[in-house]
Length: 260
Image 1 (cartoon, rainbow, N blue to C red):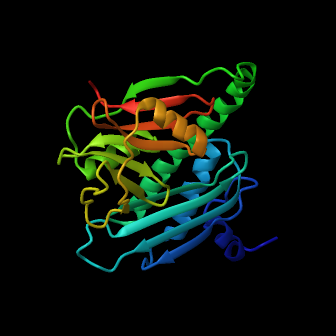
Image 2: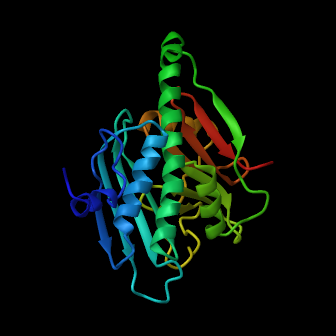
């Protein structure tokens, strides 16, 4: 029988990951004495358990930038290969402290997993119906996803994170229509004229300097069908505003357009 001295270390180890979830590979840079690796492991694996999911790959990275001028120097990211999901799941968060970054990372991971499950389940349930309607013309369903008032890039990021969506079309405070895409490891920012507005210092935003094509709704749908892409950001000559056409799991399209 083990003595109390030999048993004690077992009682103080961090919680074990759920069954069939491999111990995450955690990389920590610039953080010392906070037990952040064990904390991040528990946060990520408990999130998977909350959704009833298992994973075959879990990579976590936490780093603390040494520059004191950076408002949110702590950064946490996760890259997961989740059983049952066709695509890997990648999320990233920045905050003032490493623990705050990990907590925000967990919040985003919860939403991303929920969105991925809904999308995949919707695709399965609609696949048979799509086969029955094979040859029918795809329809475009109009939605409005523009804010009532122009917003900054920082406000657009906050709105996108809160919505749990992958894309947000918004009007910047400068008056230009823009597209913000959550790429998992950061955000891609596009503008109609190919000149994206300035993002907040230290934010993981990649400006894409490519003007949006000028297309009608029908031309946009045809281009999306021919290219096989998932989404298309374009200028509609009818209103000279930015529109986002997104391919749905059932083969139809959603057109995110401004209020008229």
